[in-house]
Image 1 (cartoon, rainbow, N blue to C red):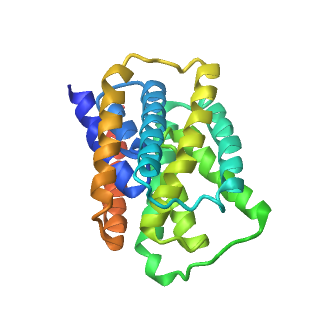
Image 2 (cartoon, rainbow, N blue to C red):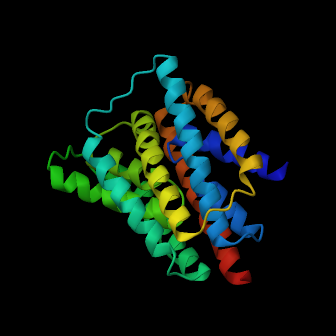
Length: 243
């Protein structure tokens, strides 16, 4: 029941903010004492399922989704997810958590400094693929779908508004997490023991988050992202300290 509630809460926030929920599920599972490989695989599976249902629900409810500019980002993210998941097989759990803390700190700084950046609109195809690769590597390495990194890229580098970036981010996170899951299976990380509890929560959380997102203000999305980042850093510091 606890795992279901964690997935429900994480996926609801993930659907609202575009990060997919993995940023909450993975740290929560490691703090609960689960192996990093199991936590990462379970998190990626949750992100994939929640993103699929969120995207389908938005299409059914005729919500506008601008996907024309995401092709090259998606290609890069899929390749990067395979690479990140492969790299994970060579790292110790503490090393992964330390990298995760560093990643979250960088994201936190960028979110805080958002008002000092002017939005760009990148058109260079190789740069789009490169950004997608970075997003994919974080998805594969940390099992978080890459949504958090992609939210930053879409808002700062592609001029997307926060609520628009949420939908675009979920789409790419769906593809990146699918690629990461395939590589996890190849690496021997596939452990389905928690999915029976987590996936129902992910589905319901994604639908609930979509209903909330319709009424959410743009600035609220950024505030929620900062809160999630802070909680993620705290949980990983606790994991490293008690490992």
